[in-house]
Each structure stands twice: as C-alpha cells, then as structure tokens.
Image (cartoon, rainbow, N blue to C red; front, side, top):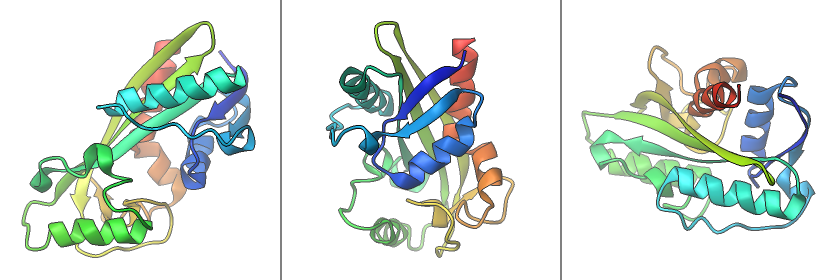
Length: 192
C-alpha cells in the first residue's frame, strides 16, 4: 500500500525530517509537515506513548481528512526508574540542552547508565482504521553531550553496539536502528 499524501503529525521539524528519511518514497508519494496544513495543537493527555500518538493521529486525520502518522516517544533511564519517560519533552520547559543538563544532573555519580528510547506510532486512515505499533532502541547515557546531528537527548544516548551518540552517528545509521524505525517496521508488517 502506498498513500498519495501522508501527514506527519508533529510540530518538531527534526522529528519530521527523521520520519521523512525513515519512510522514504515507498510509503507515500507526498509527506506533509503538519504545521503546513493547520496550527492545530493536540494536548498530550494520554497515560501512555500509544495513547498520545493515537490522540495526535486522529486529531490531525479529522482536521485534514488525510492519513496521518503520529508518534509519541521518550527516553527511559533505568537508574531513574524509567524517567523522564512519557514526560521526556516536558520534564523541563526550554531547549534540548536544558533537558540534557537536567538528565545528566540526575545521573551524576550513577554507575548504571542503561537506557532505552521508546516510541509508539499511530497511523490513522480516516474512516478506515488506526494502527499502533511500538519500537525500542537500547543503549547507555554518556557522561557528556557529543555531536550536533539530531535533537532531544540524541547527544547523550549511545546505542548498544556503538561508541558514538545518536547525535554523532550519520543520519542513515541512526535511522537504521532507531526506536522510530523499529516501530515503523512493525507498522509496515501490520499493514501488509
């Protein structure tokens, strides 16, 4: 199945670009950045990543009448009992660097720095169906930020099997192993 148009329901340009790379041209002829359609703001009131992704996908599908892909994702750090998790983007209001500083401050002196990125994707096709999948990428939190590629916590997340952070890895490498990619692969399998 290939969609003629697909909205990526995010206001985060970095996330949109990452999705465009992950999706490629085999899934949709035209990939649309949601703010180009409307200034709709969807409050993330869900108690899980899946609920938040579904809220966004359905809201954008209702407004546009087009198929919409939304995600909700977070960084789960073992030593912080899974925090910041669902609140990864909202744990500190400010720039990504502020959230990274918050995280590193909480982990100061921690020996166990294991973490994972988690993502839930929701694809809503108006009048037909909504599919939800999940994906993960495991790794560790670095002691200091490194790299300028990416966004969010990418500068401190070192995926298993690598010595570089997500922000240091080339985009094609990151996008081949990321939590969003793993969730998208499951979405393709579910559609087929």
